[in-house]
Every structure is written in structure tokens, then in C-alpha cells.
Image 1 (spheres, helix red, strand yellow):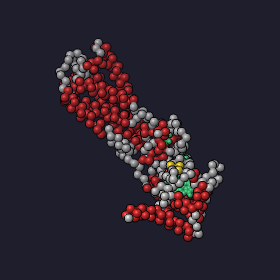
Image 2: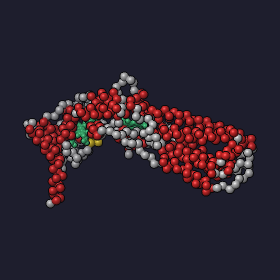
Image 3: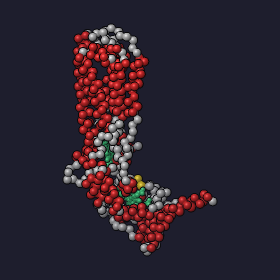
Image 4: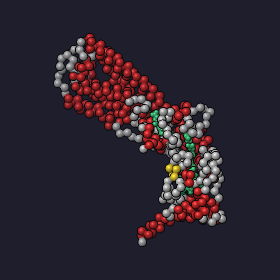
Length: 126
Length: 327
């Protein structure tokens, strides 16, 4: 009983961060769809500098379960399914803001963010 | 004159000082300076401290009271000069260590520009020591010739003319222990105090690369960088309050504030009208790394080679060996 309670409680915290963000995107007309998010995650976009095409996987790697590496700086990036991921709505929004601009050259729409988030939540152990 | 003997503690002092001073000189250059140099220098100070103590409680011929009676005037002056040189080197050495590296007893008490200035004095004293040694060796050779005795040999076996009284080894050991005391202070190598920084610096600047210490660029560079929308093709999107906090802190501790040795050197080599945005293209940076095999990894990955980069410390000896990256 107690063990089950702990597991539920441990999962409740991250879920609430993504839940509240998803609810926020939904209120802006989004209909979160993990499959669409998966496609978005891997879709390549032309680079403004004419270099290699860019996608979310350029830095985060081809699998959500493995570590990535920043394309320019070589800085290691924890797997997207790591325990401390997606626990802070402000942090998630901040990185959407940074990474969408770098990858797509523009901000992501609420529905794009909702789809990706649904994909990341589904891809994770949670 | 020829009835003098050199007692065992005095001979040990002589050769110990000779060895530690020469070894300290050889380990003193920029590349290899570090623990060995500091420990050898401290050992030399300890030996000099021993000599002062031995001059009070030692063998009659080693006492200060007998100093001018036992030595000719030039020899006495020469010996005092050597002791003074060692103490001068130790004092300036401590100031350099504290000012330039933020280590040792003077850490935090001496500014970086002061440490750099004292470094030239330290270097001059070291060369004065080399000159002193040349004169000393010439004097020993001349005196050996004049007395028809091998004085180097005498400094080894202690006999120069008549054998003296038995050596009070126990007293010598006691004095030597006292003399070694400074080593206890010098041996533990305390790491430099970590750079105090706002949490926002790590949070906002430490995910894509090292949260670079602000003393690597002039204040005006940080001002421009933190006001810019475009960060090397990335968008940082700092909220205005955070941007202000980071800008205030970084500009207060920029290279021009001269808080570290490299800050002083960077500020001195950046053109007054230049607004550098990269550390790795500063003439200073390229000069220092000219001989370093940088490999294919980005040059901005300071911490690959400088294990204390996070703390704002880029000690050259910590960066060696060059193949650190492979490990």
C-alpha cells in the first residue's frame, strides 16, 4: 500500500507540471497528439546559415532515452526521459522558446508545443 | 681560519639549501611551476630558519657570536646575502602565489596586478641567486686553491684542518624539526575559493556550455552580449529582471576589474575600442593556447582540459597533460 502510494506520489509531481502546461495549450485551442508530436520532433528544417538541416533530434539525439549533445558547443544533454525532466513549466516554456527559434527559425505554436509535450510525456517512463 | 670545522647539521643545512634552491629554480618557470616549486621554496625557508636557530643553540663554530670570527668578511657577507635572498624569494613567492593564483597564505590579501608586479621582483631575485651562486663557486674554487684543500670535500665530510668537537646531533634534529614546520602549512594544497556567482548565471548560462567566468571578457562585452537578441545564432530570451541581474554582476567582475591574473592580462591586450564577444578569439587566449593541441572538439569546452574551470580557475599545470581530453 505505502509503496504504491509513494510511486503514485513520485509520478504525480512531474505529471502536474506537464498537465498544467497541456491544459494551458488546450485552452489556446490545441488538441495534444503524441503521434503528431513524434513527427514534429524529427522533422528537418533548412538552416538559416545554409548548414545541415535542423530538427529537435540534432541536439537531443535520435532516441528520447539516450543522452544528446549540443550541435554547436558539444555540451552533453541529459536524455529527455531523465527523472528531472519536464518538472517545471517555466523551464519547459523557456526551452521551447530557445529551441524552436534555433530549429525552425520561429516560435512554435501552442498546438505544436502541445503535440511535442504529449510525445515527450508518452515517450518517458511516466 | 684553518681550524674551523663544519658540524653535521650545518653541512646538512648547506647541501639541503643548495639542493632545494637549485631545484626550486628549475621548477620555477611558467610551465612546470606548481606544487613542487612551492614545496621546494618552503623547504628552503625551513632550512634558513634552521640556520638561524642553529646559530643560537648549535655548535660553537656555527653560532652567530662566532660568525665574523670564523668567516672572512666577504664570506660572512656572502652567507648573509644568500639567507636574505632565500627569505626575499619566499616572501615575494607567497605574494605571487596569493595574487596570481589565489592560493597560499596571501590568497585574498594581494590583488592580481600586485601579484603580477611582485612576480618580476621574484624573478629578479631568482636571477640574483644565480649570480650569487656563480660568485660563491668562484670564491670556493679560489679559496680551495689558496688553501690547497678541496673545500667542497670539506663541506661533505666536515673536516677542514683540525677535527672539531663531537656533533650534537640530537640538538640538530630538534632544530631541524622546528625548521620543517613551515612545510606543514605549505603542503596541503587548498583549492582556490570557488567563484561566487548568482544562481541565475549557472541556470541561464550553464546548459549549452560552461557558465564562463565573467573575468574572461571586458565589462563592455558582457553589456553588449546580454543586451543582444542574437546569441551566436541562439535566442536566450532572458526575462528583463534576470538580464539586469546578470549584466550587473558580470560587468562588475569583468576582465577590466582585474580580479585575477588572466583578467589583468586580458584587459591589457584587448584593444580599447574593441568589443570582443568570444573568449576563444582573444589574442590573449590564442597566444596561451598556441602550442596546445586543441583537437576537433570546440575550443569553448574549457572544462575538458581545465578541471577547475567551473570555479573560474584555469591553472596551466592542471591543464596538462595535453591528452587530458582523451581520458
